[in-house]
Amino acid sequence: MRRLSSDDEKTKKKRNVAVKNSPKSILEAFEGIVELVHDSRLSQEFFKKAEPCIRYASRKLGLSKIQTVLLAIFVDKSEDTRIRQSEIASFIDVRTIRILQLANEIDHLVDLHYLKSSKRSDDLTYRVPPQVLTALRENKPYVYTQPPVIDINDFFDLFRKFMKEKDENELTYELLEKQTFEALDEISDSLFVKRLNRYNISECNKLLFIYMAHLYVENRDDNIQFHDIENIYDDDEIPSWVKRSLRDRTNELFCKNMIENVNEDGMARSDAFKLTENIKEELLEELKISSVGRGEKDLIKHISLTGKTLIYNATEQSQISELSSILSDKRFKEVQKRLKDNGMREGFCCLFYGQPGTGKTETVYQLALQTGRDILRVDVDKVKSCWVGESEKNIKGLFDRYRNICRERVKNGQLAPILLFNEADAVLGVRMEGASRAVDKMENSIQNIILQEMETLEGIMLATTNLTTNLDKAFERRFLYKVKFEKPTVESRAEIWRAMLPGLKKKDALTLAAKFDLSGGEIENVVRRHTVNTILSGARKIDIEAIEESCKLERLSNSQHRPVGF
Image (tube, rainbow, N blue to C red):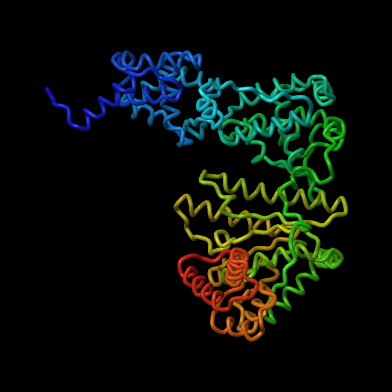
């Protein structure tokens, strides 16, 4: 007979303590269950030992014994947002097939919203929502309540939530359809539902129409393509009959004049769709959609930007002044007309490149402020996804959204915003020849999409990058203006010091500029630290020695970290 090691003895004692004392909370009961279920293989002995904990939690939550045990394990692993059945099996020390036999029990936890399930291709995972953990900490069962749907605004807000869950693969098409129609029933007296029902279309086409209306309500999207439509179907696969009926215009939505093809240069695109103007007026009247629309809600408004004095060398100053003039409303229209008359692209693409901290991004902000244009900022790393095909969809969707905003604004006599690709090093580099790795293929696909979109761009695209030599030639050709931002000269640094630190003597500014080869962004860091220190100390005079010491620290930190901002 094997003797227990000291570690085994400690474990045994710990488990005995867990069941000796009656649990006083759900989480305490869960802790006891998890201690005992580990490597237990769900044996009868386990259920006997864990009975006090299981009974307490089961009664509090209204769950069966096995559901309580499973939930306790999931909660113990709740820091992981992608828990697999194989991990549960490994923890219990059973084969995955044993957990598969308990699929109905897990599904019941999903139905009660204790768990969220996500299925990407054949990868089924689970997570515990934070609101469930909150309820358990308060020692009470979680009761899911769907917010009431009072009117059409509430309905589209709720549908947006459904689509977020669908995008995360936490909602199947069948469940999306069920929940959508339940929400519609709650506002059955609304004009939207009454008028929609008059069209007497099938449920699958009704859901498709609602999704298209959702895209219009959210982003004023009048260019809905197949890659958008596939989002509502499981595994992002549009049923062949749906795609065929849309291509050949035999779909009910076409026959009843609810949607139409997008028209570009007098030609109808068979792969792009929009709601008809009549249907917008008839069905979406209650929404009172403003001319701006929700699609602009996260634009950086030019009126929110703060004016700054930026110091450039002579070449940079000349180019920036020219850009500021070109991007003004009247001049830009003249430039676009001249380009169009000469059979050239109307879009205006400009690249700011150079070392970090030299003022590239801040220059874009100041140009936006000077010309009265808002900014749609793109941080490439946030657009990228680890899932195959998602990054390409995100980039394409981004340009679609920008195109719709531009058209809407021009139609309403407003200025088109600036599309800013900030720190775009990741997409402007040389493309990989003969790429074989999935990540390299994705990078090339993203670059190809951006290159194609730059060809048809009708607005203004500005990109910033720290690349100085590794720029792909195809991108280089498409940027009309390429402005190189150099590190400031001694004279420029002295001007930056005096601009950022009013009251600094000219002699001291020249000394600092000559002694420390800092960029504009680094100088700003030093000045900010000095300002904070003077506030804390109550000092009123500029302490040159302290500033010099701060400059040394900035240079030291710069050898380890890249400075951020101008």
